[in-house]
Length: 599
Image 1 (cartoon, rainbow, N blue to C red):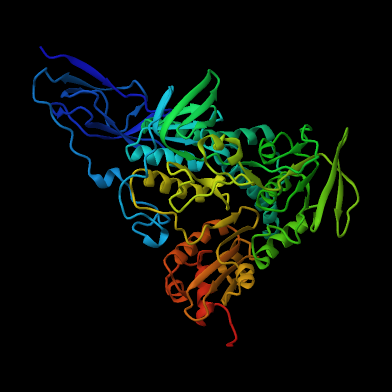
Image 2: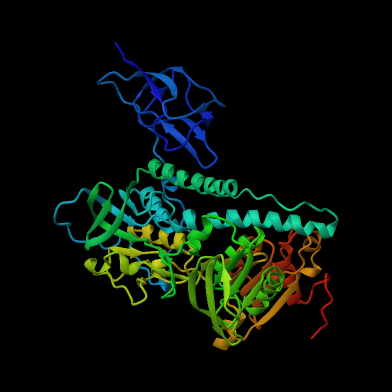
């Protein structure tokens, strides 16, 4: 007599009440073990639920449109009798199991120094001693680079252990960096846009800011993403281990967990240890009124006066948030301009706007001393134009980040770390120890999540035997200020310093119908190109949504596009996306939306 069992939805991570979008079987069907039964979809992912047993479908317990969670009945299955021919699940096409490599991981690029053998990276010697866990690939750090490396390696069939010191996956970017800051910047943009609509005849009252509710919304955004990562790790059977990991040997890492030390042995390791906030020595860091970017994102309160030390991207993004929420902001920068890495013509519209909004911006100036007082932090300045001592309710330290290469016991594995904490790697992301790779902030500038994720796939695919290399022609940079500033490829500053001949075309947004219609015509789109071939060399944009617009020009550079390629591509009208098109037409001398005298 055959046994009948009830098949239920298995553990699917933190997903609950997700929609059934497809039922793949019907009563009477014979199913193989691991054959897909239903397809479910959340707002983050689509997945198929497999059968844990082989047999015949007797009764379905759900239909398309139902919502399911772990434990929801799917069907009654009459198990196949012992000795009966077992149905086989259809083979998965190889193409589906191995997604295409990203553009930065170019196949067969001998010029990039890739071995032409498809064999996996050189395997390490056998692990000696005992370990609590063994992994084919261990990833140290679960930021964007780390979890991407872990998931890609798992997709390629590797047994993966992912080590993260914090309670949630996602690293600095998801938890206390990119994502929460963009949530708050969106809130700031809503506030300032509402203010500025008064010029167009629509006036709102002063906003009533519920700081607790705003903080809760920001945290909910972060939580949604980090929970999604937990689910993705479970689906890929990636083992996650929370604790501080340090190398004990070339094939072993000790992890300090809440339950004590756990030792992990590995065949290969990918270091994704990230970076930390840089500090100026001698400041009163024990005083909670002195914040770093993590503290600023906690949004404890809205200070009456805020001093931002550092006029780079992080400092100006947080200044933008606190200004919109009502703080009087002062920015201090040691260099002679804000965001030193960008061309000055791109920074001018930003500087002009924030000079009107902020209390003060001091360039060529540094904070020599911060003294804790009952009423605030007393700042003493030094510089060409030395400001008077001033009292601030809070001070934000935003003077950059430092890699964590020196904090992971790398010397016990023989991995070379330089004096700044960086780990040198080749184009396959290998360190000087062939079976240990490094990605992200810890292996060099720029410290950007989108660089780390591409490096992560290169490392994982190299370990799996793919012929790939990190060979990106450019890595775009974006300041999510108001207005945004974005640039990629060659800058004018670099071209002049290196003696590279170039020509440029700058399209002013004052001639853009879309920019005028949203009341933000201060922007500029600039293209740098080769004088002889007119091939694009670099680009910069300042204006609303510049970070979204720069992607087209990154692709143009990667594909070797020239001004004609961009200028003959039909762009939708009226949009801000037209502005690179107009700049290319200026380079070609064919623009009609402006009058440009012939040279």
